Image 1 (tube, rainbow over the protein chains, first blue to last red):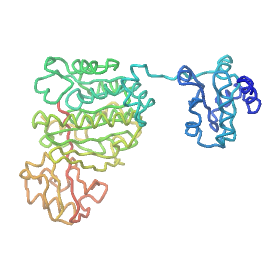
Image 2 (image 1 turned 180 degrees about the vertical axis):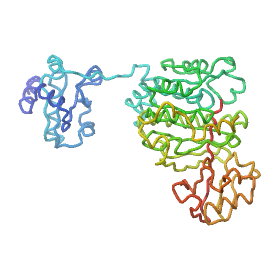
Image 3 (image 1 turned 90 degrees about the horizontal axis):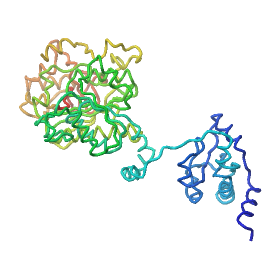
Image 4 (image 1 turned 90 degrees about the vertical axis):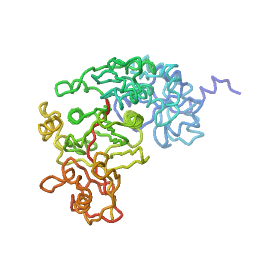
Length: 395
Length: 92
């Protein structure tokens, strides 16, 4: 019987080996007709790997490599730390798995680094994060990649009230990296029937401060950015720029139109919901991929047809339901899973326990999203076609 | 008879009815029948010139009549019309 070292030497002489310089040239050229497979262990891959490499530990080669390299005639380059495990993996793939074109990189990542070539250092979760987000990691639609996207994401909550409260709690729990909170109100006793981010002992406290306490209690790692202000045309661009998704829980039309115009200009998707009584509406407005708020509602209704929850009341649970449907859409947009509610309006009738879905089309004459974002000026932000009439009617 | 779904803000104009059955071969006919059954809805649905108010969206089943033939859109007895005014409430 040959020794282990003899066996490796023998196999290396039978397979094709490729020098790191050739692999480096291949990666630099942007050419994509090959699969680069890192066959080392998980902890080695997590420390650093070659750019664009897929990870298939040698112990899982037979069961996983076909997922990483489904075309057995394509060029596959394996590597490890020094070129031994990758030679054995290449041999297995060629002789036992039917691959036709597998090469092992000489010297592995050690020689690669000695040559001064670039490596990727993947972002990984800490042991605490792995535990905290373990139920996310188990579902393939989120997994490690989706969780990392959530951790790097920035979500702005417009309003820390009925819709913003459940959203703040669940998005914080889900690991959204940065939560921006816009609200200039203070916590009132009458809010506590539904605004679950606030509490009895925080009555009188600014809602952004109260919500921050609730967020930090559930997940101290979330970065909270507070805007204790009311959005208007003078500050909206500055506030919303840089956010990945905006959750609209505003309580009036002028702000909804203003937010729409600014978000179309900046290309930021808005997950919008509104509630009254026992009824809720929900849609996702993703600029230029689907309709915008003005495509759906070109003109706001007169004040008598647009009562507020303060005047007409609302079932306390309803903003919870709608705020969490919004949060679900936010997460889907961030991780890129599922069918977001773009171009669709969902109506929820809590008394009937029924959902109705309506189609929302882009309006080719839309005063905002039918134009190029660069054509939209500061002066136009938030203007209604009949802004003065609306304000006069609203008193 | 087509079914018209009445939004919350218009229910005070229909005696609290959430759904009203109305005759009519087109969206315009159906809405005008609704307005004659429940006169308080008329000024909320139609402008003085008889056009559908721009702030009221009307759907035949799930499609906005603005992308169909507007008030002329044909309506069958099994169709459902949804009247939908914008809601702004986020509830502070």
